[in-house]
Length: 577
Image (cartoon, rainbow, N blue to C red):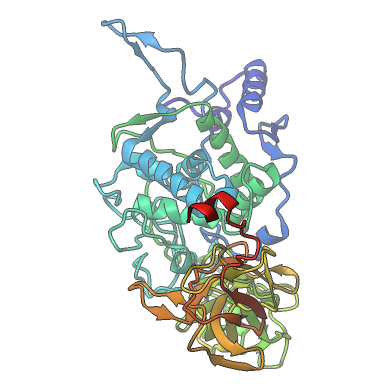
């Protein structure tokens, strides 16, 4: 494995001149916006977390430890050297090699996101950079053929002992720990985040955080969930910081991103290098749940001759000191929550396909009615609905702010109409949830207009030359996918279906005078099928209506052909007859 800059600095073997050269070279090789100060520490000039990526907003990993090794200074893809046969062979740096299955998972996730969220502009190299920092590319590609790690990759338990405090949220389903959460898998998701961010990337019907295809696709969706454009440096920084709220983490990921952008190559699974330095000063091996250390007591000093030993505070007054009792841990903010209260949520109603204009606001409160900050609140969409939060998720976790309020992401209505519920619960504490009712109404239009003005006429027994085309709008905006009904009625004052005059044909060629199930297109437009006429002449009415009450009456005329302008027979023709 190529020597790491971090290790060289730690050993202190370089002279001041060599160190200066190394710093300059590293600075030149890192991502845009990343610089190196005189002590070899990285900074990012525009890496300030966005309001959506603050320390209170939760993260994919629960801010678990990560690998801090930096890319080597040499180019990832040196010039090809010829083989014995004369064919160029790339002698790439070992660090630039990514295990084949892991690399395939990253590229497939990028392809999927191009279709799902093209505006996100997610590069697979970003997933590779995060995968390197989180798990050393699944421990050097130690995965099975379907992408599942050969053994679990677990971060330390998040018990508040040097790490965040996140009590168990999955009953040990993913991390095997029923007391505290641990980051799991190649992309190091904590169970509470995987609950809503998990994806099935290899099509086996399961969402497994230990599978690199599932984890890579989940990470891609997570990074694109905030309507970020990752081709923009500010949005890129915000997305990375949302994965782990650390400036050093951001700088490290950006360094690997730039390195991989310069070139990578595939290597066999299981042959990749595993980083050795971690942000918690741990090594490169798999972390195990930390265990609390037993309390220790210092022996009392020997007493002077002729004196009695002083009683130990809290002891039994005898000469032997009693072991000190470890102090009880202070309650966390989550421990103090008594209930959740609504924080002024307005009525939640939206038309199918639209975004709800109001958001859910929930407040965490103590028994005394005091607001509690930094409490994780989970919002879950419940019921028969295809509504989602922004980003396409059905679950979102948000930390309460300094006022104790957690604001859920915006809801987006699907196509299913009716009521559903959004349930707010406290992560890590069993208190009654708070339910919010939301309603999705059908798409509507308030105006219908014809897109043409040609008179619609037909001869008895014939067909109309022009088809009726209309456009629907709602409050001046295009009304797309709105249900439309077209009926040939007896008159403007009698909306009864006519039994004579113009008609449509069904798929079997039979006469029908009412059409249902029609829907406007993405531009709010609709063209009706061809119309025909029986032998009845006169003026008729086609009434077109939409959900929401828009109505348009179209006049139809059936009349015999006008022969008054036909040329008279010539004299010669009359004579011959």
